[in-house]
Amino acid sequence: MIELRRSACAILSLVLKGKWFDMIASGAKREEYRMATDYWLKRLANWDLHPAGTPVVEFRRGYAKAAPRMAFWCFGLNTESGMKAYALVDRDTDKPRHPDWGEPDEPHFFIRLGGRVKLQDESETANA
Image 1 (cartoon, rainbow, N blue to C red):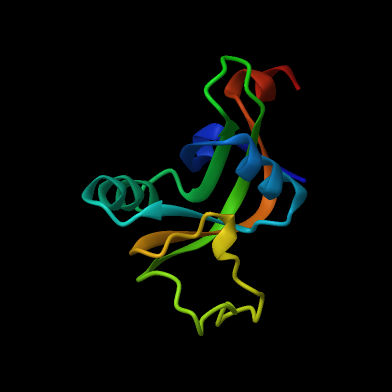
Image 2 (image 1 turned 60 degrees about the vertical axis):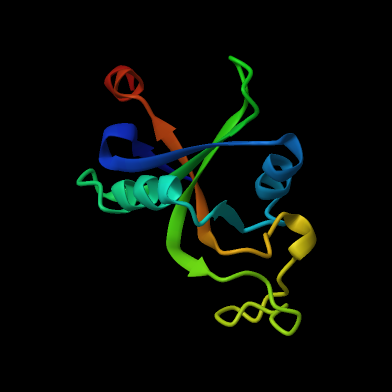
């Protein structure tokens, strides 16, 4: 697992329900979805164009203070118009798509996840 300093990354922090967090942690689910609203358009545009550089998605399992976290490289953002009955295979990877994994039928942003990374705070790198 690659270690990255938080200050060297453009981090998109997302809170997930336990089911989705666990599926991403196990490697079964390699994408995350957000509704195509003005809020998410602005938030994702600010993140994708952030000058810090490396785009990383950090997930937190729920809202608990000590909730588990994990981070992944982002392979890209797509805008999708929703699942189609004939489009149950990802056109880039030939991997089956899973509408039962929370992929919405309405327009949404499709966040492709890469490998897992470990984010270090500046205090951790100073002590190492």
